[in-house]
Length: 333
Image 1 (cartoon, rainbow, N blue to C red):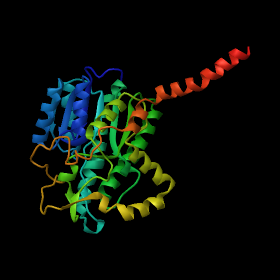
Image 2: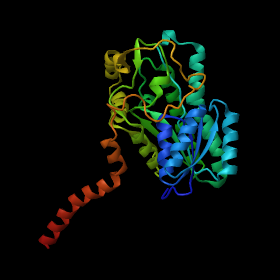
Image 3: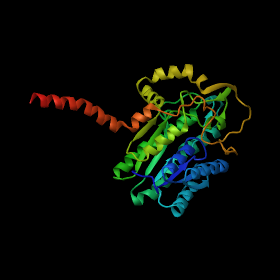
Image 4: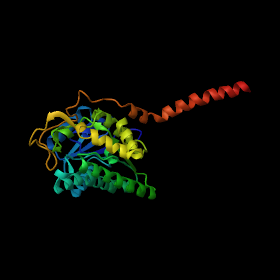
């Protein structure tokens, strides 16, 4: 995707966090952005930020767990904005809790939003993209789609399911010789409001497992990935390390998480009792893109830079190796 000017981009979970930062980044590069989420106040805040960078925002409150609502939004976007070029499935909810304290209703809800929301968004996008045989669908995944961690069993299971669904669909599109591209973007830990409004049963306030990155790092990766033909893109070296570490040494990862996976997901502040959460209903305030970890979050990823510039680096390295050889051959002649 050489230019995002006049492109139509749809983002679910766009009212806060990575989704909101991604909407702003797409708008900054010239795209018109359709913002989907449950929280009206967050969506209005996101709309204002998109328009502040010169972008065009289209807003609809909906629950991605409801396939009919997602389909209706896709139809309206096509009618009012134009053909959808990029669809980003980013909506999610989680519960930080031991399995022994989880309810069936909580497991169902996390699955409906995080997994089925991805399915519903993907199917809605395909319904419009297939007749044109073009478009890109991005699944916002996580290192936790490969390596489950304690206290987030529902979320990890849903992300595992998203990966299975995406891998199956990718092969089907290849079998059809489809030009529609499907990419998974697997994130590390990010400074988003997720940890301020997720349902939690912990001794202390939840936090992402450090190191933590700012959501704009993920946004840059997602916008870049929309124009690539990559199967998967990892954002942050911790995601790479987690995915490959689990493939090579899963038992070691188990022991490491046994020691660090509990304290690492909690800060030193006692959990506020009965705090509002967004599991079944949106939290009625604008939470912005950032969470409460600005002082420790990184705004740059060396791993992402290397990923985005690997073709140039490969050329430079190849030149550095081949040029001396060529000069040596010429000298011998």
